[in-house]
Amino acid sequence: MKKGFITAGVLATVLAMPAAAQMSVEDQIKTRQSAYQFAAWNMGKIKAQAIDGEVAFDEKQMLAAANAIAAVANSGMSVLYSRDSANDRAENTRLKPNFFEEPMKVREIAVSFVREANALQEVAAGGDKAAIARQFAKVGETCKACHDNFRAK
Ligand code: HEC
Image (tube, rainbow, N blue to C red; front, side, top):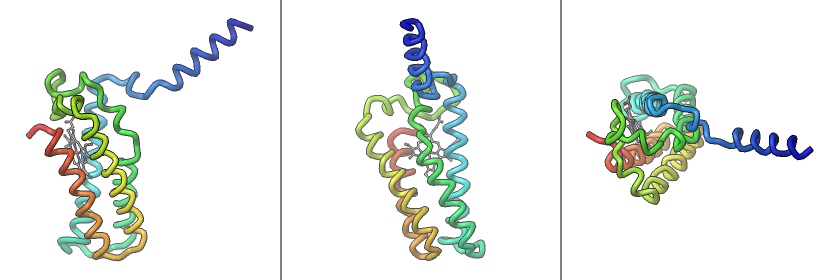
């Protein structure tokens, strides 16, 4: 009985481990870069249709793009940020080490990224082009805030 109990406990611990624990630093970097690239691709679609007007406005495409950005924002990306994955220790990354020295600032920016991305999703569901453009700008500010603070040039 006792042995079975311990085994279950160990199993629960393993299941509770963040996914990054099994992920190499290289994979963390590649995954977060791809996620941001994907978000940027979708931001670009909204910009082209709701702001620049170089592509005809399509409500469904705007919602699909907003859904994708919100999915990235809500995916729990913090597990892709281990200390060893900053650019003072790892290759092929622009993550600055101060990311790990300013957790309050990181949190504040991450929380606003999620909040504004969720709001964009809601606004996009309404289909109002001007409202989408305004909320797009708010999301863009959160992207920029993080890059200005934590992404190397
Ligand atoms: C919490 C901070 C944070 C937020 C929010 C954020 N980014 Fe980034 N972004 C980074 C960091 C850090 C990197 C560098 C990652 C690396 O090189 O490991 C990066 C890299 C990128 C890259 C380059 C990816 C590559 O292939 O190297 C693009 C494009 C990008 N971000 C776009 C965006 C857009 C668009 C948004 C908002 C919708 C956004 N990011 C929100 C921190 C953030």
